[in-house]
Length: 378
Image (cartoon, rainbow, N blue to C red; front, top):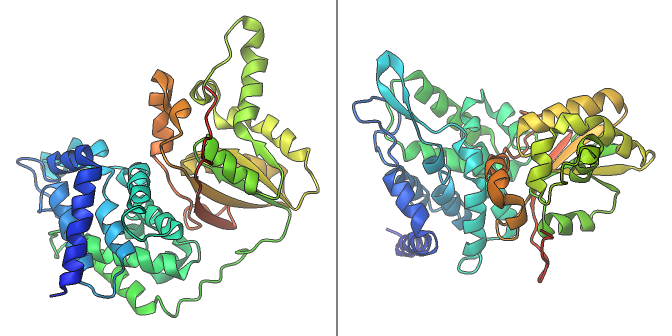
């Protein structure tokens, strides 16, 4: 018995209960097994019980780090908001949690940033944990270690963290070992564990030659502005392009211009503004790299825009950087009825991976904070 690690687990759980009491209550109140239903997964029933079992699995491995324990603790933060009662096989009720990984990223990020005050966790580790939170269910559907390496954007350290979360998640679930799904999960886990040290994570076009168009995705606000200001390349803001398109369409009809980003995103879709966006990009023709900044929080939004632009920029390579930003400071983006509806686009943060998004030669996740004293214009 490692008393030091047991004490660390207690500190983590105590900190979560003190820092996020409402979230803890939602986790405790969310069931995983519907009354009268049956499932090959999660016979432990409640989400809180499952999370504690996953955390226990990380605790019991002396080779697992604090970051792994934090990853185990936050990986299912999206379940309370995505729990839905459905009809399963044989007409029996079941509870689903579609997209709970991406939905839990912002809650996990905000908690992890708070944790930096009490625990030693780096920005890079927080980015990796958020990637694992976003992708941990998608990881189950992979066929083997080769796919898993590509899935983790060619980063061996990220693949190793994902595999450790995978191990804890399976260990913390009371599952039916006779099912094909369990056998597939176990086979993938064993394959990754056996080959992770030797897998060659050098993929074609990992470091593409210019010209390069980089999608910079994330919520608008001071933190995003700070990241964009740090780039040494021209930046085309999709939000400004949509505002211009909105003005062209409705300005002469007396429709008031939106005061918040949410209004712009309600009025126009990404592909509506794509031709005008292409024109702005071509204004910087000849630059080795151009950044296109926008929310683009889902794979579908990125894929649609990348498909359009690639038809016209045939000699250009594409990359994607997702900028994680604290909820604090996003009030102008999330405020109001429109913002409440469109906040879902930000909540469902499908962090980029090369396996699902082959249009990109590079994909990564970074963390940015607003400068001290920065404010959002309303």
